[in-house]
Image (tube, rainbow, N blue to C red; front, side, top):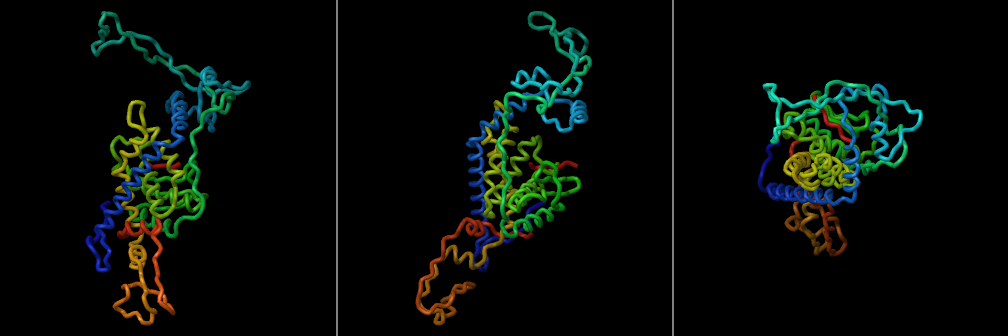
Length: 377
């Protein structure tokens, strides 16, 4: 969906849309750069790296074996063989019942070309390869059936608590619904929210505080804009998809005055690590590479969820109002259009307080008219 067309230039009230849009873009670019730098310097990065190296050291089971494991021990999380657990410093407890899976039976055979002729190396010797020629039952055990050395654990992203900015949930819900998706609260399993693209549904957990709920809805709005199967960047892995959606959520909530940094930094770091490769870009580089898409999606959401600054907001943010005589004697020509100055019995000077973060955000952010699925942890 293309952004709704909007007028450009300076309005009759003196509000310059072009200037505000340029300021908004500059602010979003700065925020995204800061996000990438912060995630790249997190103290928890080493912990994330240790955890993922540990998790990736486990054998990847086929679909059939995954079903077998689930059927025998539905609560299994990490499984390995008896000796594999010993190699990791843990021992299977006496009396535990093993989980049966299929293991490959391999054979070392001569490698042949398409014509069936033996392939030889540079010395003329036959080249051999290991092939799977059958399967056999194997016994594995879940981590809950073992004891010993403590396992590394990934840093946890703590759920946000407290109230949400006034009106933010309704504004985000209206935005998502305008994209053709139904928004609801309910059971999300182990996730905080999810987006189902074929039936166009977005759901957010109902048992979290309002602050977490709006953060999750902003995250799902990022999925809606960026990750429909027909819109998703080719070859985007799950790690990149989650980095993009959570980056959108962080920037949207920050513009509304809600600090989600603790949750976002750990969430993004974890998913960026899964997208990284040993010889590839760093975590910080991965986050930076999402900039154009994240900023574009955030911009669309903020145009719909942050109101245009009022004349009063502009006056208080940009002007110092000086009253040199009682209000009763101020002529119409002396007054700022749209600004009401309280009456005074004697001359007084009224200095507007400097704008806070939310006021600055309102200045920079004008309002615009209003099969697969993504799961957000």
